[in-house]
Length: 184
Image 1 (cartoon, rainbow, N blue to C red):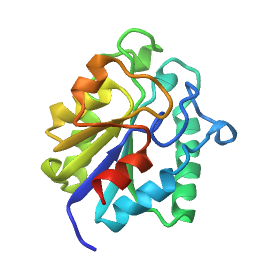
Image 2: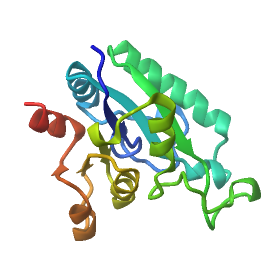
Image 3: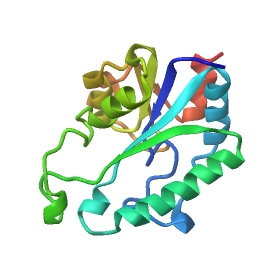
């Protein structure tokens, strides 16, 4: 199915349980229902793009290569569940807590829209026909700044502030709950 609908997903807290500075597959826990949710979106014509802040690289906790190895493993898990991920964008920077080569206030670290804008340009995506799903207000701000049509928060077991909730078009307990609600 050819379409120009896009599902932007944050990684930690949306796809997997956020254990903080995750870089090893043995520590990666998919959130229950994430594959089913992604299949539902894919069957409804959405292309999936992951956009993830990875300041652990900048802080020296793990390397870009560690991130790429984990990403390839994650994409293999998606593929084994009949889900195609169009692309993965990441930001290794941090404005105050990073090694010199990563110490910068960039335009790719969410809440800046850089990763979303890169994906839109690279793949010819229509931001008005896109959904951003994240677990933090920064994800919602990045979507807003990139002109993404809809933005939703998932709690994935965490509590959200009133500011987080106000920044979103809706709040759901998980990606699967969102898929079942808006794709019904």
